[in-house]
Each structure stands twice: as C-alpha cells, then as structure tokens.
Image (cartoon, rainbow, N blue to C red; front, side):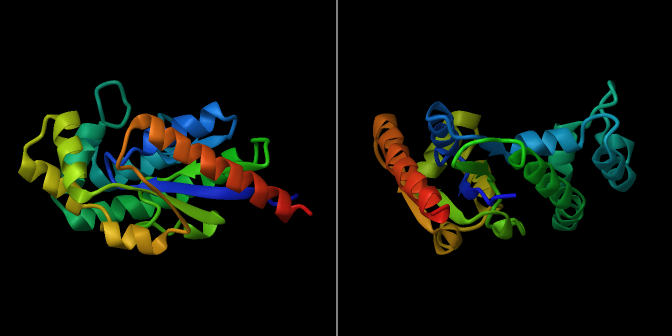
Length: 204
C-alpha cells in the first residue's frame, strides 16, 4: 500500500482547531477526528466501554447503558492517576480506530485532528505536526466566553494540557491564530497548497 502523507493537527483548547479542520474539509481533505474515534471506541458493545466500566465502575454508566462522559470527566479531572488509567485504556484503541479510518480515505493527504497529540504517543502516526497557536491570554478569554467558566476554571483547563511551549517545540508547521476567521482560513489554504506539493513530491 502506498503511504499517504498524514498531517497531525493539534493545538490548545479554544485555539481554533475546529475552524482549521472545517476549512481542510471544505478543501476536500479527509479529516479524521480523534474525538469521533474516542466516542466510537466506547460505544455500547465495544470492548473500550467494557474496559472503562471495569476500571471505573457503574458510576460512569448512564441510565441508557452508554458512557456518562460528564461523570467520567469529573472523576479523572480530580485524580491524575485515574486520568492516566483512562488514557492507558483508550489511547491504543483510539489510535487503532484512527488508523483504520485513515486507511479508508482517498486523496493526496489526510489530516488527523488530535487535540492531545503532544501529550499522547501519537506522534509516530503522522508525518508532520501542524499546531494552531494562540496567545495564552486570548485562549483564557475564549475558554471563559465559550464555556461560561470563571478565570480559575479556565486556567485549570489550560494547565491540564501541554504548555504552549511544548506544542510549539513539537510542531513542524504553525498557524498563528491572532487575527480574523478569514485570515485563519487563508492560512489553512496556504498549508493546503504546501501539503499538496509535499504529497506530490513523495510520490515522484
């Protein structure tokens, strides 16, 4: 099977990843979303759900048999060891599901949207890392506006992720989201042309 150029799209919370991913989709690029894969692997009947319930118990099972995401989030947010246990269960399953989906798409290159790419062991899945970068003060304002959270809550969410410096250190390519949505979309168009050239060169 011919290798397809794969771009890992990541960035901190409220950085503009969703807008960037949507623009890639508009341009006809397959975008494989880690959050979608994460939901799929814990759907009722899947081994991922059984493993999570086995570890965390009935408290994280909703009345309809599905995973109670809010209860699970609250549990792992307060306990780092529980979060590590959950990651150990789910990350390999999510990686496998994303690889399965990547193998089914067509096109010169594909984008894997992975919010926790820097935190997880997914770097080997992608050829290049594209980071959507945003000033941390702006990020806090966006988190508070989006989630209606306090400054303290927004800071806690921000600190739970890799630092801005760590993301930038892992980046091959960077989109600085400091302007308008139109400017952000133009930046995606620029990288799209670049990735098309890289994909073509790889198959020469």
